[in-house]
Every structure is written in structure tokens, then in C-alpha cells.
Length: 163
Image 1: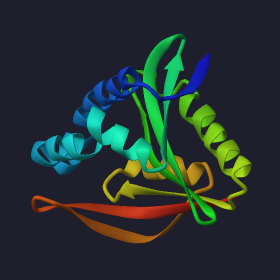
Image 2: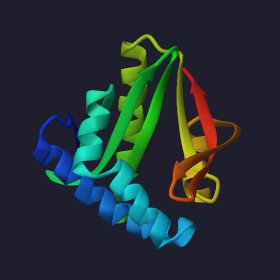
Image 3: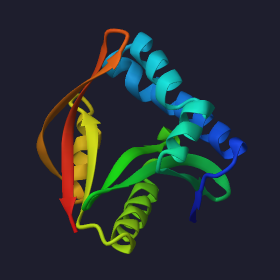
Image 4: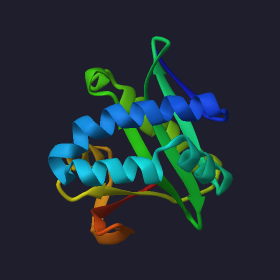
């Protein structure tokens, strides 16, 4: 059974940072390399970075499966659209409908906020995730390349789902 709870405390943020460290190293090192993964974890997924994001309108949620923290999501209300910033599940818990249930939760949040679309960005080489998002009704609307500093870029596709 999946439980989704809002992350509010420093302990919640530490739990997310720990999950990020595990998931990102496993998933992204083959895609973007260790130096960029290390940089991005520090810049975007440290306890302080998460607290700063929450203070600036992002909502983080912990995903717990049978009382074990297995992943997290982050969303932000934007004009007319819900931005799905982060969506990660530990590899050993994939295939247990956690992603499906989390996406339903995200869609419900968008509807509560009276938003017409959900958008996300996904690495152009993250083919499995792109396929999953397409299965759930997201469409690729184009390329987004963002300079994140220290010589690194995020080379992503933007995907959108109309509700």
C-alpha cells in the first residue's frame, strides 16, 4: 500500500536527500556521468536546497510503500500548469504501481489547483522514463537545454499532459 505525505521537516528533507543520492547515482551516472550527478545532487537535492525550494513554492512529498520510504515527488503551481519537478522511485520498488498511484495523486493536485495541464522535463537519454510518461498521456513538446553552472547543462525534453 502506498502512502503519500507532504515533506515539511528537516528530517523529511534528509530522507529525500538520502533517497536522491541512491536513486540519482544508480540511474543518472550512466547517462550524464558522476561529476554532473555530484554537482546536481548538491545544487538541487541537498537538505538546504530542498528547504530553499519549499520556501519558494515547491511541494515535496514522500512516497512510502508498506511503511518504507521508497521515493519522492516535487511539484509547483505555475500559471495554468502544474510543474512536476521531481519524480523518483527506488529501482527495487518499480513495477509495483507506485508510479501509477503517484501520477494519479499529481493529477488530483492539479485539478484541486484548477490547473489544466501538467508539465515536466526529462533527460533526452532517459528513454524508459520517456516511454512511461507517454504511456500516461504526456506528449513531448520540444527540447529544453538549461545551463546549470560549472560547465554542466540539463539536456531535456519538455513533456505535457492536458487534463
